[in-house]
Image 1: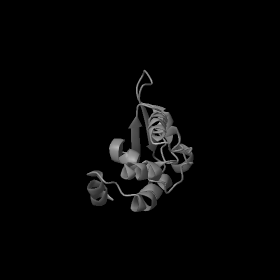
Image 2 (image 1 turned 135 degrees about the vertical axis):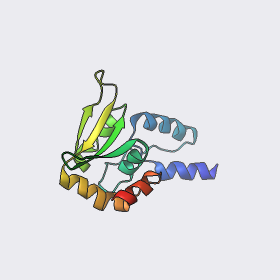
Image 3 (image 1 turned 60 degrees about the vertical axis):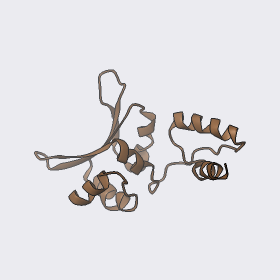
Image 4 (image 1 turned 30 degrees about the vertical axis):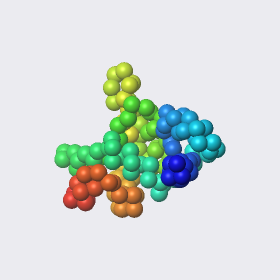
Length: 135
């Protein structure tokens, strides 16, 4: 029981997903732990790395010689918080607006993410190997 409580304390205040936040509140109530509000997303937060690891892609357009970094999600609110911190835009990726994509395409933003952010916030999936190979 002490191990679970320590994990709860370690992630308390770090959850950005509104659905997971509500679930986390229920767990905190069970263990009688006060829930902290989510901290504001900062550039060096691992949140982007986790989203990218699970739902992100890097594309290269040969015609325009442009690199795009994207993350797809069903909920727009998970992506909207990325724009003020990392740049890019969020747009609906289907007609029904049931899926959304965050895209970074400006050269300086892409290079900053590759050279700075992902240097310190490594991916842990197979994308880590692919990233290292290509960039």
